Length: 211
Image 1 (tube, rainbow, N blue to C red):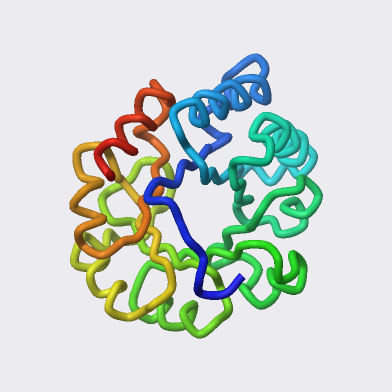
Image 2 (cartoon, helix red, strand yellow):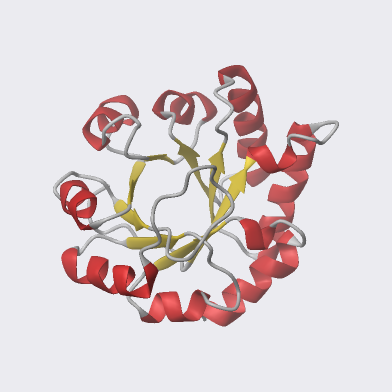
């Protein structure tokens, strides 16, 4: 893809763990996705840390069906499932497949994003052919069991200076603080928790606030 990826300002993340108590998690996730899209989301990541590959693939294929062709879908961690589900890209963390390895799997036509949590990780990721870099957590977050240290708005500003690649900010971002994250230099904000209760309304709010 290269450095010319055009990211929307809003990046919705679906955490499958939030739906674990649902009687039919796949159906609940599909309906949640429909609400995100109805609200205007055009870039959505599917994240499932359960390690259940069969479940992930089943849910991901349903997401692809629901999203149709007008929404870009990103698979967290699993480059193989990105291909199998027909997703548009993969997002890898520091302990996952390397960006180079992910590129071998998904090819040149799909998006690769990389999570970074400090200046050293950002510099390393910047030297790869990753299409976008994520920096965070910007604020305290409750969606991960062992979150990395908070980088704050200053971390976003430093990251902006350090890379020309599209920059995604993540971690504790809400409708109340998203605008200042963009003003600190992020091209895009990734949101998990603040979408959960009312996905359509929240998405509409974010898009209005971010302009």
